[in-house]
Length: 219
View (cartoon, rainbow, N blue to C red):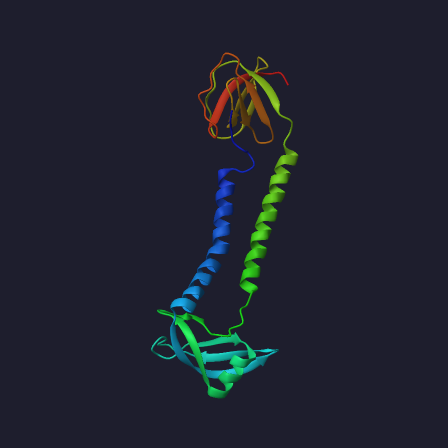
């Protein structure tokens, strides 16, 4: 039997993937650039413009030489005590800079900030929680599965969800096929599934496509 889990719809899945990319890609790119600065960066001597103690660490302000930063933009980095004291004494700071990207640099003894990673993980966790709540809510509000006997061959369906009672007390069912078998198929409607017993009728519609069939409901 061909089956497809009906917990997610493609539109929802695409939205989730895009949200995760927006949240995680910038951090991944930043981490990759920092790695390149450490391994392939150009070692230069920066001019220290200020040193401030922050607890057991030091905040060191500096400007890179014009050879790597024509604008000589000011930067600040948090470093270990020994590095900060040396920078205060010499007014110089060895810095590895990613070529062509002076905003990406690394200093030996640099104290890493975990805030961006924590913010990203919290955002990922919130998305996961929302998905879980949506999935559980979707399962809780779905009504019991109906069972029907096909009165005709299954045809390609239209967009939308339909359970339409006819004048002869039969029903037209239209929705997405979530599973198929030799003698059955399951059609997903908005709030419930309908299992169709094909009997002698045929079903050319594959899982994931939309189907339409007239049935006699028996349960």
